[in-house]
Amino acid sequence: MRLRRDRRIFAAIALVIAAIVLSCSPRHGSTPVTDETRAEALAAIDSGEMPEWREWELESTERGVRYLDLEPGTGRRPDWGDTVRVHYRLWLTTGELVDSSLGNGGAPFEFEVGEGRVVAGWENVVRHLRVGGTYLIVVPPELGYGRRGSRTVPGNATLVFYMEIIGIR
Image 1 (cartoon, helix red, strand yellow):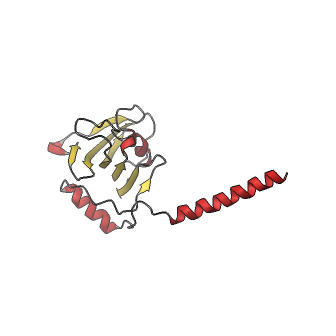
Image 2: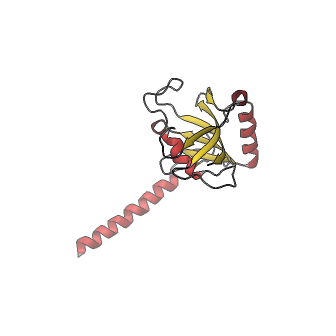
Image 3: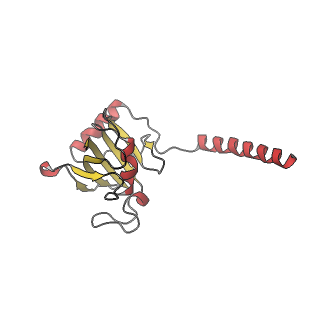
């Protein structure tokens, strides 16, 4: 009986300590995002540049993909099995643009959620976003191209995406 009570006390103390540590830990970024910040980010994206996102307070998915609603959508959220149409730009954290669906009147990119045709970070974050919205998305290496990289992305690269969700079919 006493052992059970001691375990409960220990568990309660551990929870309190964890809460204190987490509340004191630095968050990714420290600057709240304002309408002005969003407008500056969209202006940078329109000129083909990666916005300076590193200090911003971004939302985070359960797997660690960070994102920001630049222009929140009003449509529904994609779900497993939906085919999503998006426009995107992909930068490395150096600011180098390595891929885009927007150049030269490019067609939107389509993928089925859950099919595994895109990086795992996209599969993870797209279900948090809404049709009609534009987003800045930061994908950690393990949910991007991993250690091996790709033809245009070096290994262990963090990926920074601009994504516009055009529709679902």
